[in-house]
Image (cartoon, rainbow over all chains, first blue to last red; front, side):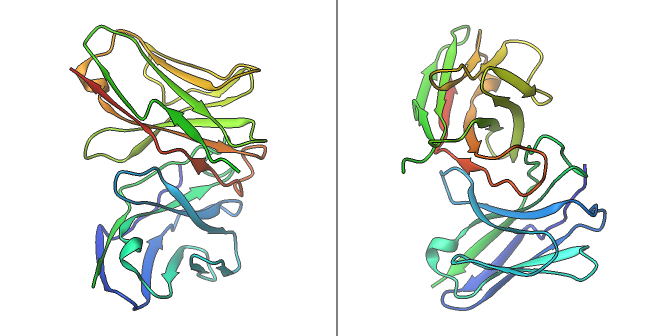
Length: 113
Length: 117
């Protein structure tokens, strides 16, 4: 299974942008890059996903490196509600042909008021 | 649109009893995944089911655990003869699309927190 590497923790101030990095140097050409987050005592929540091009949605932006060996989740203005564990996950025939998600330890984001 | 529903939200069992966890996927979703999160640990895949079929059970413990997703009704994760090590949060997720392409989004339920005394 293709692996991802994320920092264990990051801090941010409220109302400021946050850039959460993820390395996936063994990604295959058919793997999608997914981001989920888990707020305390809740189930995981889908954030965003992409294949090659940068992606934007109402929650965040995903910037994918040209060689696809790394990506960055961008929260444009962090709020206290964004404090969560963020998971970067690869999904596709190269990593899992049944669609199961393989969660790592993720990045614990703390947002300070 | 109701999201993924799981019940009960909290379940307490004594050692040796059976635990039944239910998951109702989002309307129109025919793919269900179960994950387990042990205390202070990450989420681990357990099993992937489509209606009436188990597609991938590579994450299921070999004994005491079983799962089903019948033609009608919710998906059930069943744990027989529970032990203290089964205490965990169990999450169900559903997806609308054929799995494996990589672009599928999974929608998670709130989880069932099992405590074994």
